[in-house]
Image 1 (cartoon, one colour):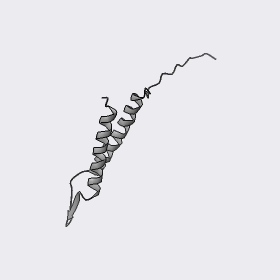
Image 2 (cartoon, one colour):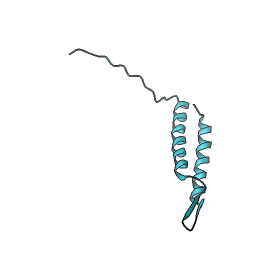
Image 3 (spheres, rainbow, N blue to C red):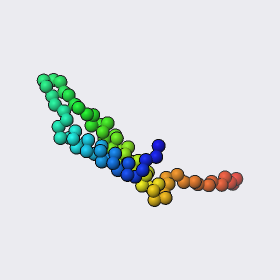
Image 4 (cartoon, rainbow, N blue to C red):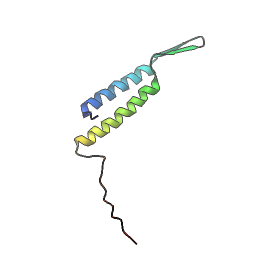
Length: 77
């Protein structure tokens, strides 16, 4: 699925904001039990995903593509 550069930037900012909210105290502990309202590992995974998607979208908007064609000529030696 292809996303625009603007969509990628918006979603990346949303996930970065979520990460900062989690870092500022989205969990607490009572006795031996711990409650977390969000999973930080999943949020960081989404941040990496959107960073990659943003790089792809920016490359596509500038006319660059990650796919390259290489021609190989087999030769008998």
